[in-house]
Image (cartoon, helix red, strand yellow):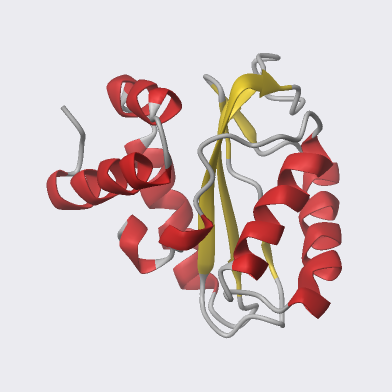
Length: 158
């Protein structure tokens, strides 16, 4: 699975304003609403579902990266977005470090394979330190989208 299979380019945010875990999740969900990928009426339910998942254990996987995700019946296909917080947010990460790079995923409950393949793709790509560094330094959504496309094409960004 590639980033282009689930990341909504028009929902990418290169500079989130939120300073809290729930705030950044809400801001990313709003970006998906604004992009027409999730219905406004479903946003609160999706945010609550993601926060419930966070209660099980932080999706802050370390090295300044978090992958908040959930399954929700309001979507009929996997959808996601990417956001960057230049200053970093306390996300209760496994390594205790602030998170700057966020990948948010929402998938239908009846498509667990897609959900897992997307999570696998994200974690594989995020093992590349230069890819993470470039994403965190990106100047805007277009640059982030270009980095995702390059990762899709080559597997890693050089």
